[in-house]
Image 1: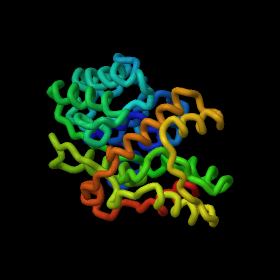
Image 2: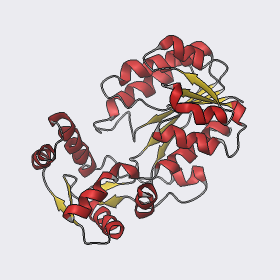
Image 3: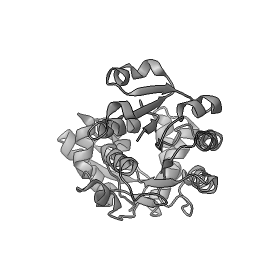
Image 4: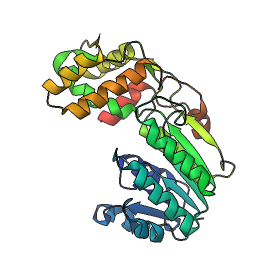
Length: 284
């Protein structure tokens, strides 16, 4: 069976490749990358490297030739995702890919999460394509809060507009392990998995985890959205990015990332990585 991973040199894709190498012959793995010069290490391991951009339907069609199971890692280019994702699915259909595994967002078709609309479109387009599919609705990556470590070290404060909201995050390695299982084992066709950590933590708990890492007290300062936008702009973020961060916090405050399902730990056969461990591992 030939297994392909898009975005194979990205943060998630690279981890999936590593997981696949535990059980899969390198020659049966296809790494689909935007820039082949960044994938030299994959080639030396015997992995097939194929270059294709999500904006290039013809290249995608060629990259997916002979693929039995494709991990379609969602684009990081917000604003271009709909067209790019349509290209990937159309190319997979044209190439006769055996099954597409797509990385989506929690409750994508019903959520008010700011990131949900593009994923909703993609899930619906994939379902309508006739391709066999599996959908992995990944909750927030614990690593998304790595940037808070240095801020906490310098200020002793975690500032957010998330109120008492909770996040059932897990590490990228956890989500990568789940993707590898679904790609290589039978019984997942047509399934939609809601994946996340075993515990939904709040921002007081995040502040406590940061305290452990920086070995100094860190307190959570809860602010409203406009205040957070102002603070973020003062430290150099542009208005659009600051507004996005504030909207994500508001979504968290309203429970968009709080659901704990247990499906991730069941797929990977072990507990999901706790918040503190995930931050420590990622920080090195």
